[in-house]
Image (tube, rainbow, N blue to C red; front, side, top):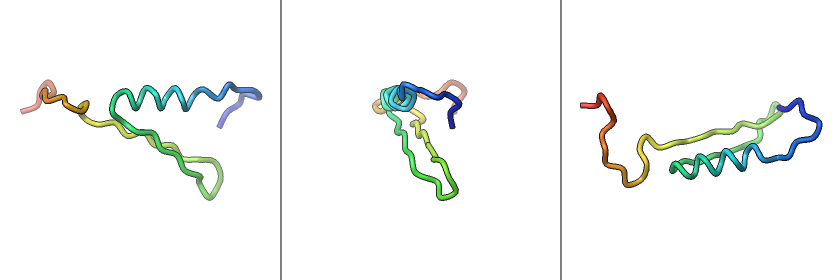
Amino acid sequence: MTTKRKGMGLGLPICRTIVEAHGGRVGARRRPESGALFAVQLPLRAPGDDTVAAGAN
């Protein structure tokens, strides 16, 4: 939801670019009640990253 009367519509494309740069995905679907649901999925590690997180055993 937005309170802006005129937006540039750049929010989701910018989010998608950032999320995909980190190996993730952004998804969207219409909610039957009204509005939309957006989901961001990010990997625990970047593809090809074999390092162990700090504190992991």
